[in-house]
Length: 402
Image (cartoon, rainbow, N blue to C red; front, side, top):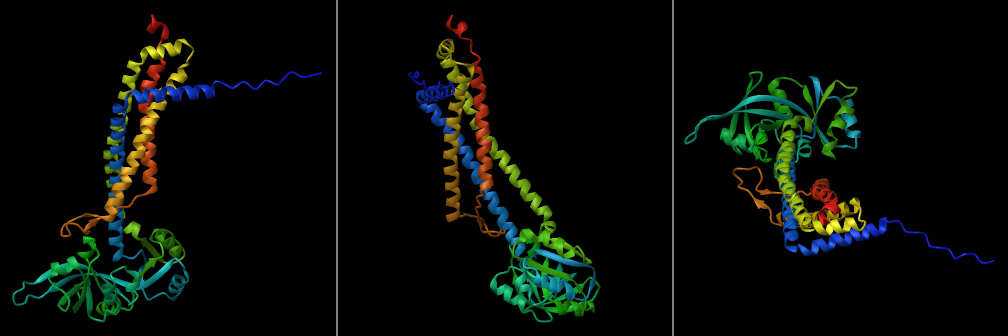
């Protein structure tokens, strides 16, 4: 007894429909090459501009943060009331692997003046003073020569920010007079000038030895400790761990410069949104191209519907056309955007040093930005293609053929 030959399982309509939809979409794209190229170029230019703008903004933000952290500790641990150095806290700082270096410090504010001399008028400006030990050169990230001078400050010597030095008119070797917050006076010799690139710091900060400020204030107390961490982003967590059971408050650099960080984040959002509009406008150019195609292919679509093509098949045809145009624009735009970023990395955009704190505009490409730009671009192109696709699927074959 022979069994009937097994019949192969019937293939569902999904595979033929997908093949037919792509064949029709490809045939439509071949007939409008000039329009398609212009649409792809429009999307590519928008994506290129968005990637380049975000990368330049990231680079500017990073450069400003780096400049800020050159003369600022990653974390300051301040006692609720000024007190003597805390051996237990210092032991905890030495044992914490996240802490790279630390120094006790005493903070004060005062008025710096330089007496008038022959050919030079007197200079005066307010300053925020930090008295620190020789470990300050490891806590702050100043250039080697400035860091060495900071580490070897002697009693009665001071280092001034570059803008503060210009305002007072005092430079290396000059003598300045200090009137501190307790109305006590002393004379200091300028050991050197430091430059971070952040005008707010360069115009306000002055560093001296811890002994100098303690002698001026008539105390042996300190304000707290300044820390440099292996990773600046860990500052809030380290500060919380150190002050949870101690009478100290933590001030991470993110809190100290929170307003600056918020402004930079807002600046990036505004720039990104404005440039994103270019991508959106260019993507909706796909809607114009596909809408024209629907008008041109109305009879063809009606015939397809009459011989059994479903609405979903017609919708897929035009969605595939929009997807092909969108992916082409995104791919080209990514290549152009990364190319421009690479060019500015090799040959940075120069800036006038007397107007900005950096002499060139750095570039920082972030993967999250690339993923976000491509996701938004792809979603926008699909939405733009959906409008004419639904219009094509709603064509009634009987009315058109009649």
